[in-house]
Image (tube, rainbow, N blue to C red):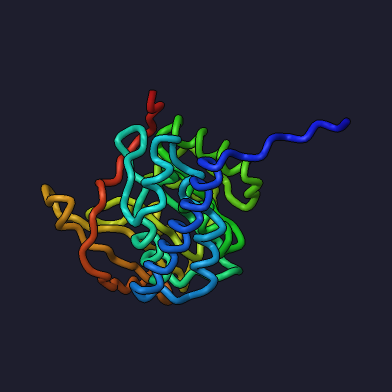
Length: 233
């Protein structure tokens, strides 16, 4: 007689149903905040944040809050990521550079919205774990690179959009140099010594030639961009 696996316990089934309900409630919460782009909501639904955190954070990942990561980094809240991607206006044909891979979650969401994602992370341990997660989930249009996000190699080429998950006084020249004409870069800006809760999210849009237009999206919380490479061990 062929082996038949046991039915899941009532407790296990209840846990699964509770997570499904929490995930649905999170999407409804995003819609209530004005995020009505179905492609964005579907992209976030296709990359559940609980797949990118440790076992002890799974329940918290279903809430609209930021979560801590190793190496002193964070995984942003769903509404923060939705705001960033909606404001950037990402589209299916685009090539996107992400600075600050973290857990790989935001790269996974982007992968469902654009053609190609190149994600750089200065902590080797985070880059490796994010790469493993994305490979396990069979997301093949994201390249995770251990690299200094403040010193992007010209060999990576030009990008339609650049997302920097950190605060800078001004975008490093290598990042602006990687932005194609008509492209947009998003980063937080903080003055010297400014508190994290005083940072401001900005979009830098490149027009013809070297003309840069700056648009403010209001206050946000962000850590300062780290320069250099770190093992993270």
